[in-house]
Length: 222
Image (spheres, rainbow, N blue to C red):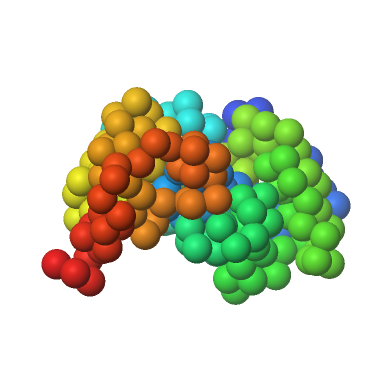
């Protein structure tokens, strides 16, 4: 539910920034830690005076409430940009560089040029726009919190699609994170094409003797 009167501290934080920088893009990512799948970044521009009831860090929002927040953000934001870097890109660069690439792509995907970027924890040196890196920014800035929700939902949807391609790994449940179940399934089947081969937990896994497991799990062989 959206409202016009601002009483929430994370929205008040952004309103103070808008005194000097009227158009704020909040930026956050989802998927830096998993062993499989992409890292997804979102850039969100919220209008002045808006609050979205219950908006906060996506990690603190129950899954059954996350989708409602997602649609409140989509329906009330001025602009949203998305950036996605797949497992192959992560393996070729590293997760930090891939995260920054996803964030840069999300900024470029915006149709409205922002006056300032509020970014969770990192800096984007190749972008000339004024920016402020905020540790745990999704708990401080409404714009970053909104970006965290968008990035989380987009990435979860990608992992649900991958579950259909690689059902052996049950991606619909753990979304590629290193749960006990996921580790057991990698050990049983070996990595599939969306696993991050550069990640130590994947590389150091004692894998099955059948070297054709990855090929067998590819959707192109079904």
